[in-house]
Image (cartoon, rainbow, N blue to C red; front, side, top):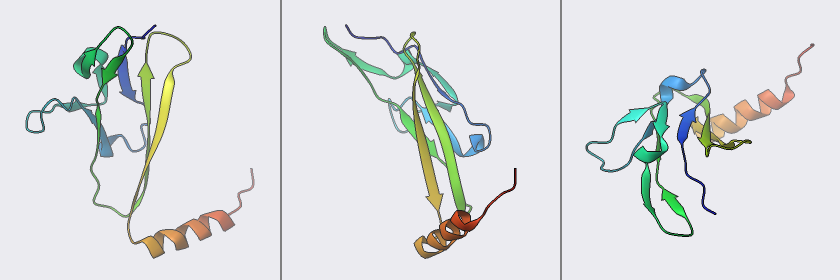
Length: 108
């Protein structure tokens, strides 16, 4: 049985301005948003499966670590989710920052 994709959403607020979803139907006329209906990205279907294509767009000009969670709603629980991370900057600098992050300890 093939499930129908009802909605796709980006859920993290912190880096919301850097990520968006696009229908991907054509590059020049692709619309982007934080929420898409499944019908906007459906490519084709057959008796055994539905095929969807969605583009996740990232815009950034700053050095840093950006993350977003993409949630796929097929009308059943649990929902399907995928975390996406974008790292911008020099690789050596990123490695140094990660080493410093790993060394940090917080009192909670």
